[in-house]
Image (tube, rainbow, N blue to C red; front, side, top):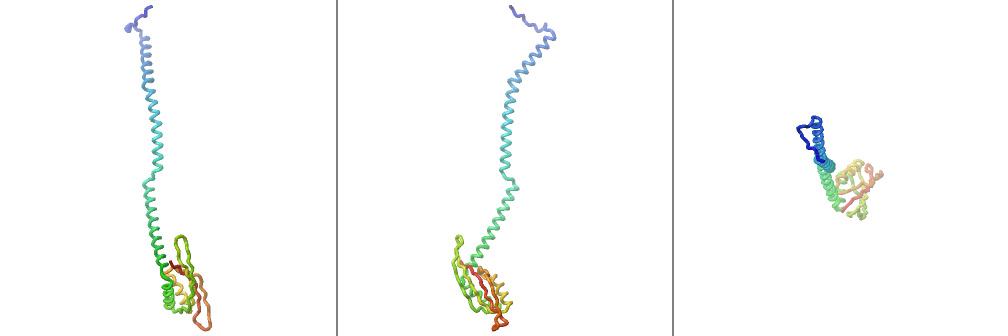
Length: 195
């Protein structure tokens, strides 16, 4: 059996339409299978990778501080540096005050009492060594017996703050005694810290 040959010139319009539809379907199927599907798979892969990259970029942006945050941090560091410098200066001043010898401080106390019209009758001292952390210093407890007017005692106590030493006022008692009126007798307990 012989297959009849197809004569394109004798085709009816219906057969031409079927052939064109079949040819278009074949071309469409070939395009879809060999071009569109692989391209779509590549696009899905690229989209997945793009999402991962965008996620990584968001993570990096969240981790990296902004310029405003960096400036705030720099300002905070500068402020803390200034505070540290100020504290170091204060510590140095306190250490310098503590380096004074107790004899020099006693002379200064005697001079201050005379300037305020008070008479320093006696001084009783007691020393103890104190260690706090890495610093060792002496605490010298002084009990001063002073005769003066009331106002002179106030001036003397106020002058203690200006002394070149670390002094703490621990107590003060004032007595009226008949033999020394209008003066009063005052016992002042101060603590002197010396390196």
